Image 1 (tube, rainbow over the protein chains, first blue to last red):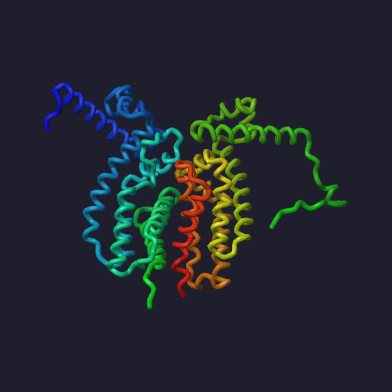
Image 2: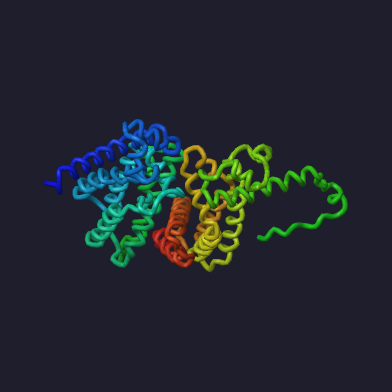
Length: 209
Length: 217
């Protein structure tokens, strides 16, 4: 893939390398030391770049965090897309597996993830930063699963799928409080959320004639 | 249940301690600090507001602030406690006007949204703190939060008693899920400026989805 000119491509790849170094350093510092406790200065030091060059790529610490999380989402989505075609069983079972993947993934770096949720309410976060909870890919996959459920026959065709998705997402997000407040692991959260899924599924099971 | 302050007579009145001037002055200082803190938390967020700024805004020294509050989180907790006690009471009164279980829950939620709509920056700071491992637990265990939980629970129990929900309605689980949904709608209000009507419409649908399974005998 040839770029416009040699000059540009060198500068471009340097910029890309800096970006990656900053994100790697930030991810480790946020996870090990905590988001609030980490300064942009420290991120720059660990990444081996100047504070100035951090700010040519990112507008704030909140912006760095949201980029770290966005990059992680790509890996999570890849995992989800790999697993989904192999799911079997009822709609409730399939949904349970999808959300379990999310809990397992995010609890690999719990502290980082909780910082991300807290920062979603942060003042300084720009509109461009991706706030927690807006997870369009997951929403789409869950919605598809419900639509397939109508075809499979265990979801009432009259159910309003968007509202079901919305309610599931609200419950899913707030179940993370167990990690924040009780130090629960992915398995414990999945167990709790499985009950939520089952209860919501009862509500849209097709009526017996 | 409105709390009407009772009138005191005779012996009771004599027992009532008249606050000393010193106690009154202390009360005024506290009120001044709380008002300044409320304003600064709203303007600058929890992290952005310092005790120094709060003291300056209240027109006193940081020492005077620390004589009344142990730290910033103590100040914030005091403000949230007062607000949440108010909102829990308002929501309870709203629920009592409900025609059925759905309507009672919806009226309660709408009252909550209406209350916080006027102070979204503070709500935003509270949500941010509620996710921090050290302070979140404390916020969650505050009596008004429990009162809100109890309110939802009671409405579901009433729904079962009236026969609107089945006996096996899994009230505890549904209470938690309704509570989750109530809270999960706040980001829409905070970041996207949703109106109370829009929040209410969404909550209405969520309540319907969560209660659907309990209506089938």
